[in-house]
Image (cartoon, rainbow, N blue to C red; front, side, top):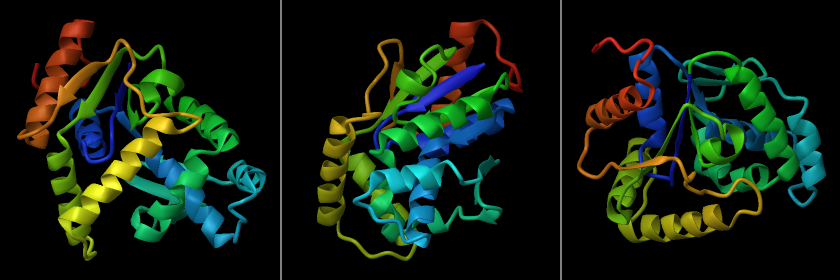
Length: 224
């Protein structure tokens, strides 16, 4: 069974997807982390960002593994390294690279194989897994998304104002919707879930119930 979760930044999709995978005993694919890993590798290799073919060539040589909640690049756990503001600022070079996306989508499909998978990103239900068993589009109000992002930044020791976070969020939303490849879009058959004022557990409970209604059965759901 393949379950896709797409949505804008700050909607909680990564946290929810990981929690849902744990609840069901499914494999979790954090596809956004894969693009961050490619960007980190490009930074470390001194890739010329104005030569997209160079980054695409590098991407095909990389060993990227998603192990539970960790991201492993060339045998190194880079789960924290890919979340730095520096890497965030350059991830667009990998995310907007058609050849990189084609390679990573193929890798995501290979990782999923015939397994039970919860996969999240911004094009999982539209491009990577258009025939997924269940598709969700998680979103939240701009205010809630900004609040969560600000909390994340402060937890990481970064300083930012609400105004800065809102401005960055607006830019990110516009960029994600207008990307030439893999733009953020809700699949026509995806169920939209608004996560405002909901805990992670409440969102997961709702998704589990929706999956059960859709499929009639649910492997790994310990809540019967």
